[in-house]
Image (cartoon, rainbow, N blue to C red):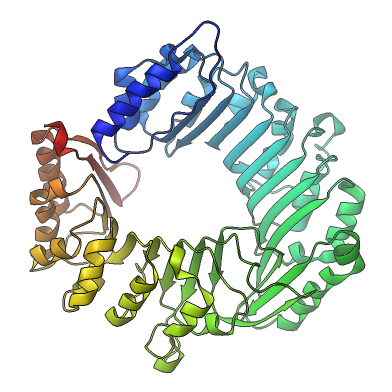
Length: 535
């Protein structure tokens, strides 16, 4: 929410709509992800006032929030769906306090074994977890026997798996119908172990890289026939590094996905894409919302495809400054976030994508009309090229840049006019400061949310840049500032002054101080939520 007033109003509306009623059960969701919102909500209300709440989402949960929630969560016994995003070591404390008797859907960053060893979680049917281990899946299926849906973002090994004797029919996930693994970086044999416990699986979505065994079509065919007889929806993307040494071998392996089993029996059609170091094969249409095009050389599909809809689901596209996009046959129609980065080569300026002669290739292969976020943190774009992109991107409102690139904007008046009207969210990777801070604030006069990250303040200009934010603080609705560095007097002074300014203005803020005992790199983060209307 943009302002504190709007948030308070939403809290009151939430209370009116979802206040307890003895005969009514409510399905609702509370999602909070801005500075101090969870703490603010818990200051106004206790969760026991929402005893009929069925769905709860808590995002960016901090340690102090967890302490309050641990005592309140048991007061909502009707909870059926819970989504927790917690980036610290306290997730188990919060998760263990959840009322589990009615819980059916759970989404967490990680799941500790201590929680699984209780009978309370046996009713869960839908689980999403960011990190998990192959070695512990047997226990997961044992303590969540009713699972129908399992989504694991990253599946790891915490120790070698040399013995599969622990896999028994007693721990089979017989109700599991849908499995999604976003990042599997191990040999095929470990995946074989996993699916021997999921005999009734109907839908499988998997992304894997590194291990060549994962692109063995014959092994996949044998596994599906023997262990996955009900599988009807199979989407995958497999990437392998070849370094130019195994190019032909990998092409031959990819061609094995063109047999009658894949094309005729199941209609699982594939496209493979090659560049000078990597090879990628995926089912069509491409199922992921992210795509990275490094140094394209060739592609092949096992049947005619519509070049315009292969990548319809891609919203986040990463391009390198070369002409790969010109040769790449497929179109990107729904990109909302574009990341452009420097490859280090080619040395010939005519081979760069973003120059006056080649920018048309970008416009022809990427629909810029839906673009909302342009990430240039790793690329020093020419101002004339950036201006062309802005003119083609009417929805663009967010940029990520470094301070050196911003300095190059100062002399292009037309570009500055576009930036001042369009950019509402600015993410800065700080290298240096500026002598003309008024020019900076003039160019980004419409910015409402400012995110700043720096390694260290190594000059007076850098110090002046950050301190100038204090005098312009009322222009923003939210500021988030962080640094990772060794001890440095400028950073301590800066965070102290900005915190004092927030206190003086009665602003909501959260300072996450550095933990000097854990790492020699000191990380500090300050978030400020501003609303001058509350004065």
